[in-house]
Length: 75
Image (cartoon, rainbow, N blue to C red):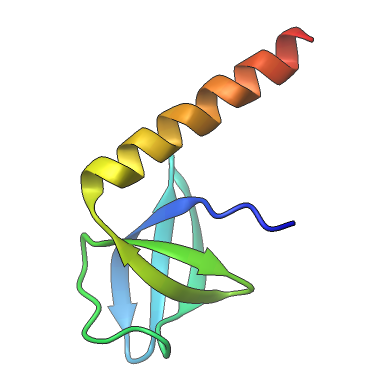
């Protein structure tokens, strides 16, 4: 099973990006996206940004993931 976490593109260098998820940054490839832009949200799998998503969907998904993590900590 794969868990897709929305990530924000904060830097682009050629076909690589620095993405941010709640303050955690890492690199990923942009080879699978058309015209990626800084500030866009993407879904990343195996080091590749594979799909763009809108900011509202990204924020909703991140909130659900945070709530699930809190639930797991309480259990």
